Length: 111
Image 1 (cartoon, rainbow, N blue to C red):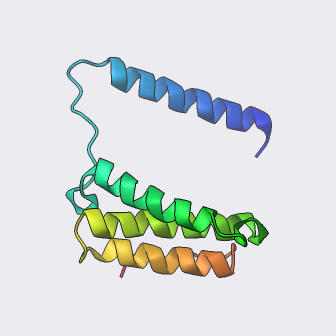
Image 2: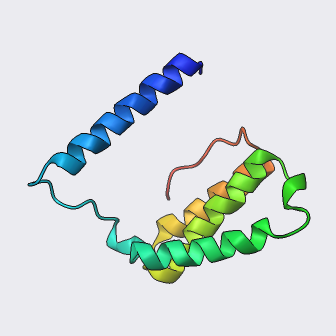
């Protein structure tokens, strides 16, 4: 992906968000009830990520391994703040763990 494509995509995203935020009748954006309260989810995920990022070996990981661990923390936040039995959270952890092993892993859809 070249810089022009990235800039175009970012411009479209910013434009879409601006339109949503300026539309007074638009319903508020909400996460699924399965994710729980966003503030709780974010607090839990950020605490987990801070713990991992503080480890001396963090910087020795490949970028995709760091991102996989961050995404696993996000799913753990959803489990702890939201619906712990929701299969999508657990299946997400499985997929991100596999991506941590192999960045070319073909993500499997939810069972």
